[in-house]
Length: 183
Image (cartoon, rainbow, N blue to C red; front, side, top):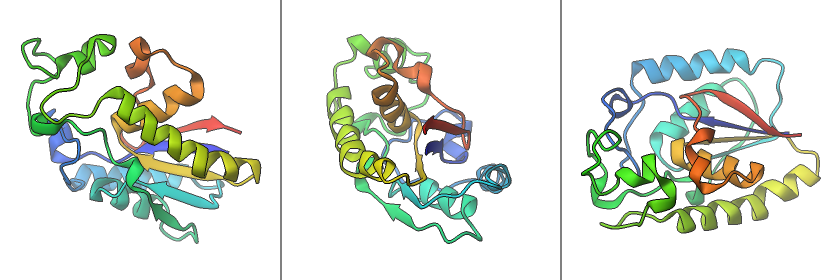
């Protein structure tokens, strides 16, 4: 089985500051969310956990899997989508004049700029990860947990479900929400 979750809350999540590759730690709420999520995983077994290299995801994985023997494997392809010079921006979602706004409100019109990553680049690296790591393990009947980020997880879920780009954000999960994807 394949499960996916998003890291716990950070201070930047709270104020809606665009994180991307910026390595922001969990806040106290995020730590509590990860610990609470651990309780919801009782009865589930994971053979392996793949995780983003960013500390907010790594700490979430460590807290959620504390007390288990599940190995946590860091994979750089699971880093959050890169937003380039727009990382650290506030009001990116509700500000049509922000050059990265289309990424969030009209994904099919989004054109990368300012060092940001394109959807094509995001889908290429997450698709490669699924093909090389996840699908072979699922064929072996292994149980997998992925701990990632908002856009990153949307890319993985979109590829598995065949979601069109215009509905990309329909796959967004809440912080520490655990979603079962495949049996």
